[in-house]
Structures are given as C-alpha cells and as structure tokens.
Image 1: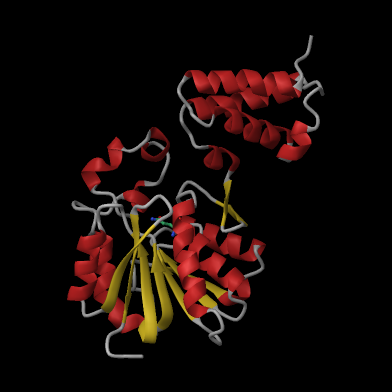
Image 2 (image 1 turned 180 degrees about the horizontal axis):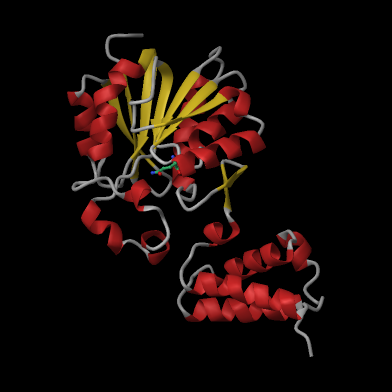
Length: 285
Ligand code: GLN
C-alpha cells in the first residue's frame, strides 16, 4: 500500500523531532513540497494524494540531509530575505532575518536621494545590496567578495531580480578592488572569533563556509579593515552600517571612532541585542 503525502510528511516530522530539531513540522513540509515540486499551499491542499516510490526515495534523501543538521535553506538552495527570493551556494551564508535591519536603515537614509551609490563589503548572496536596490529604484550598487563562487551567486541573484543593470560584483578583499566614494557602505562581515566557530550550532559550524564566519583571533579583524578604509570611500554626508555580534558594540564603535568617523551609534535588533553599528564622515551636514 502506498503512502499519502500527509502520511509521508508526518513520519518525517516525527523523525526530525526525535533528534531535537525544533522546526521539525515546518522543515518536513518544506522539504516535501520541494521534493515534489509543489508550493506549500498546494501540498497542504493535497495531503490525501498517494506518493510514488521514486518520490518517496527522493524525499527520504532530503530528510536524511536535514537529520544530519544541514539547514533547510541549503538543501533547497534558496532563502527569502526582505520579501525577495535569494539563491545561495556552498560559498555563501544563508541570508538571515537580523540582517534585514541594515536594509531598513539604508532605505531610510537613501530614500528620495537621486542616484544614490551603495557599497556592500563581503556581499555573499548579495542579499543586502540587492534588497536595497530593489527598494531604491535609481540607486546603484557594488558588491565585493573574496570568493568568486559567492560573487557568481550574487550576480545570478541580481539577474533573477532584474537588478543586474544597476549592480556590479568585484572580487577582492574589503576595499582593495573598490574605487571612488559611496553614499552608503554596508557590511555583514565574518565576526566570530576563530576559536569559537566550532562551538556554533551544527547547522552553522558544519555547513556555513568558514570564510564567511571567521573574523580572526578576536572576531574583529574585518572591522579593522573596514574602519581603515571607510573615510576614504564615503561621500560627504555618507554613512556606514555594519552588522555586529551581540557583544561587539563597544569594541566596534571604538574602532570606527579611532578611524576618525563620527556619529557612531549602536542599534539593537528586534530581540533586544546589539546588532548594528552606524557611523558617518565627521564635520559634514
Ligand atoms: N552579506 C552577506 C549576508 O549578509 C554575507 C555575509 C558574510 O558572508 N559574512 O548574508
């Protein structure tokens, strides 16, 4: 006797829950919808349909990856961020909801400014700069990354979102490949201290690219590079916004102040944790 779609996802849900995965029910549904090529609404409306043996085997393979703690977004290769759909690969992080705060900040700062320019350092999937461009119709953006695989993904996302005519992807370390000045510089750099990367949740420690997580011995190396180049790459009136770890607000603020930036401030995320530091060029309106 064959299994129905509903029976299949419920049994996967129970398996995922039994190893302590808190989002078991949702994960099981998303993976089944992905495996069958349906959206989740179609799946919920068709739970009584039988599933063929080949589809069952394919689904079990997806569930096995999740049981090994691979994040659902990596298994399906995409993640929603700021209401847009981003594809990701092994060289990029999965876009995270906390990072949407940088996008909110950038939109608020640049709205109504003609031809605003944006630089995203360590762009990964491009989620930050591309979400900004999607909401600022005449802005132009540059994404920099050390990883060519990440840049290829950012470029592909730009094409799919119809933003490639306003986006350029540059390979290199922080400001090295960048010329000129920008109205907004954003970054969600690697900010985990090298020694603690392995202590993160298995979904992160085992599957996220180390290059995107490891911020050097004290987790602050990328902020030093960003602080060193910011003043030379901000336009008059330009601002910098960087994502930080919850306990890095004071130290990152100090680095930016020591680099000659002004108006340095720490902002909290919706969970009440310090999450972003902003700064500007001094002595300007
Ligand atoms: N900017 C990308 C993101 O926010 C990549 C960040 C990173 O690799 N540290 O997802």
